[in-house]
Length: 213
Image: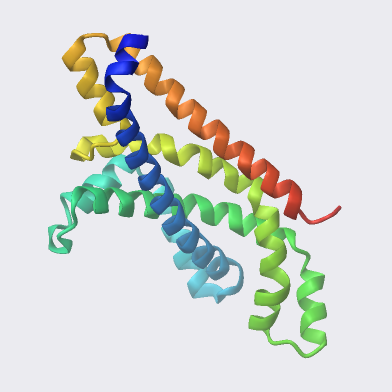
């Protein structure tokens, strides 16, 4: 395996960077979508809540590959490049799951705090912005770290539309060298190392910012 790694390490590294870029953009998009959906579901009123739930059910109830193909092949009017389509699919998919984490975090902040904020003259928007959100953000970190761990693995689906990420490059090297097991073991180790590092970083962040019991 060492000779294989030595020969293709730069090729794999470039693919890993593409995978991390995909997951970073998808995570950021999902973060924005997730908070918007969670806030709509918890505080947005009946119509907004129903629309938010419909979005979550639609995305969670359909395979990501269907969403990716629908965006890339089914929406040609958008004129998206492969990488852009993959980012959009990952962001939309991640947003539905992140919304669930954020909704739980919002609901974990007691209703009494909203009532107390309103009783001292704050508006509902001020209460959400200054009282509810800061606490919910910190409470969401443990569950949200699951999405940080999952998303780099989900980027492998982008190879189906030709994005040259890590799994795509592994498939190329495996076909070229016929050393399939060694290639995929090494790529699996790369995924594991990155995901472990990310989750450890989030564990440290959470310990520093968590709401005291």
